[in-house]
Length: 112
Image: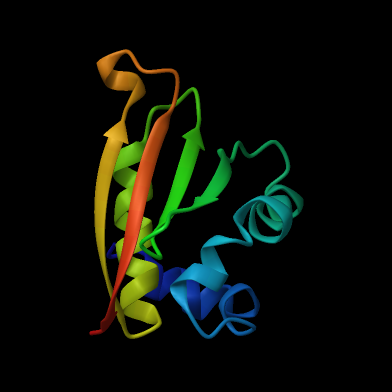
């Protein structure tokens, strides 16, 4: 959560096109992580799948051999703060509990 302001200053082009946390999160696989790999050859970045939930929440399936789902949660919270939003995150499944993937359910609760 605390590193997002630094990332937003250093890599402003990743954040600038977006007006919301949701829009930003949806670019992780196709925009942000490929650019990370260009900037830092050999860097590993996780992948995500996305499911819109009926209540307006976004479920992010997190795939990584590093099992840094708590770090991903912090980055999501930091991104929300960057966009002036509040989020509530719950984790319905986790590889650390033996599940096949981590699923982070992000509920957008309004402006911070």
